[in-house]
Image (cartoon, rainbow, N blue to C red; front, side):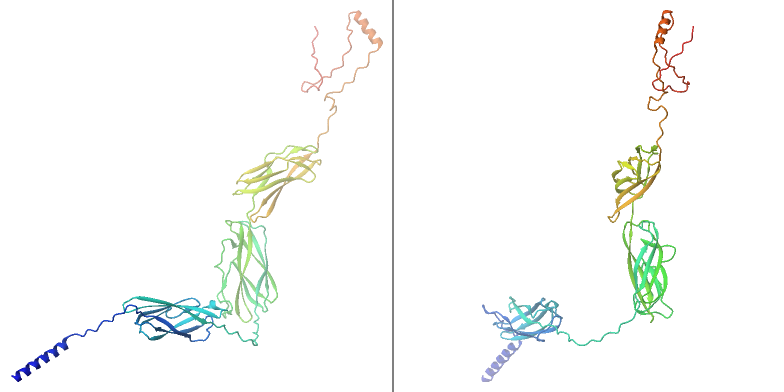
Length: 480
């Protein structure tokens, strides 16, 4: 009986032990007590450099401590760029957790902003975010103040004087166009005055219009066989070389010597009025074989003046000395485009002119403008009539066009004989009648004869001539 009871108790004990070994372990859940939370504070911070200067790099060391009653998790520290710029981390430092009552150290590489030049103190904004065991989010903000140093002043001491390098320097002292003003389609010669203003001789100098270059870079030794010159890459839309290429060999130019040269160019006929730069390259070597390329720019002005003609719109009348006469003058616009002319003035030396000024204004292509001044001159012979036309050019500068016309002035005719008395022959008055002539007429009357007064003689005028003024023709009646 006792043995069976002992076996039963042993079986119960083994069953209990097997039951305990097969059951899984379940830890108890941590529950946050209401009113408890993690609190992260900045305990301390310092820099790897005492006073970093603007533009220099340094490292910020800081410690965060959890003064709360529960653990802080998912800690993220963010630095805002300002007086100090974050490096390497992008301004973000992260950690998993800080237990309650514990603290942890961190570091952040920074650079002092160059804008801190002249300042001694800068501020750094640090944001900290975290949460508790239940995922409740918390955040905090800290403002760090850091000292900024000033760059060390360079030490003043004796400096070594560099030895000057003697090199040539070709300059364009002056330039001039043979034709003024330059117009679209104008062919002209451009004269250049080139001076060596350097302290050494310029050898194998070459001039390139439009800009050019050498196969050897400027300031480097040339090749033993000589450097080639490229001049085809220039701009020739406005000015183009004429009669020769745009590359001209000048030879050697000694120091202080002035060389006068030139070349022929043409203005493109499609060029609009304006000021156009022209690049001129001078390529040469010094006595040591170093190659130099100097680019110069000259400015040429292109005008488009009016193309007008002054003439008579009909043959002028015969002009007599001492008598006023009209001049039928016209201006014709021969250009392909319209023009604006200011004023027209007609003048002549030694003569009097009236109605000789008039404003013109807008003239279409092929249009005309007329003016009929009155000329009075007392000198017979050829007389010059000068017509002046005022206008503003393409650079708003007053300009003048003058053209000359020639008219012939003749002497006034002499008055003919008898002019001023009616134009006919002069008749002498009849002599007064005497007493005896009156007696004879009385006697003829008694005898039945003609006793009238004698009539003056009438001149005989040929049929193809007109009678003088005041003479009345007497019809001839045949006798019988």
